[in-house]
Image (cartoon, rainbow, N blue to C red):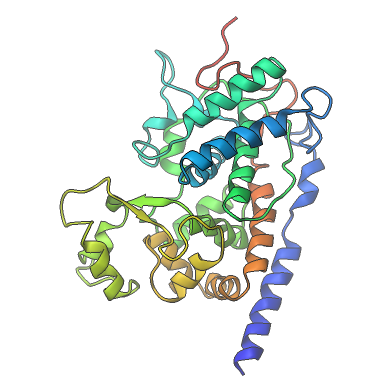
Length: 338
């Protein structure tokens, strides 16, 4: 009986994965004009991918957390105005940086690694490789370095000339959002529930701050009741370094089992009610379809890795700037001045 259930769940996920648009997006016209395709720099900057790979590998060897940080940068970029490197812009007199938003402030990191990559690429092939493409390639390379899947990265994005603080505050899923709110935020980007669950699996690496999940530890759920979706022994362990007040910036592994390995332990943790964030655990408790996907990925690591790669390609195609739109920044932190 158990094997029958698992087989059914496996088939549901496989069918859904097959039905999900993925690699064909690599050659699909974007915004009525240009294309994204993996060979975009083959002639204009043939060493581009190797340069990114080398610098990302060096950064992750020095700081294993950097793999998750670079992956997260790509997410937080694409969910605001599309994959256009707007997240990298610093504030100026006329521009308010997305780095100041609630999801990003004192949280996102990896900008110095992007700067190093951009500097190296500008020396190799000036004014050619966009910062948006750097983020997409670095996210893929970071995933591989952590033991995750590889995929061909469609390329040809251009960089935005502006940022959106309001978009960053409103469009990026938050740790305390409801299931429906998170799903809506994904759907607004053209992503479905399969993408949402698979991409949430990126929390198999990385950290979260105490302030992002404290309310789960101290019955601050809004109704005065304990959060029964969190294993109470696990909660007691977390309280040791996440007190009722103070310690806001204390870091905790999102996946306490294999925090630096890109695998399906994240989904196994959810089945044990040991998902760190509320936004993680609700994938098991608030939707039958997402629950079945969580179970399927927990039982089948290969299927999770396969779908994650497909969903990353799909996410990387959110409203990129191509052709004459946008620009190729010389410095990823600021708009070009001529």
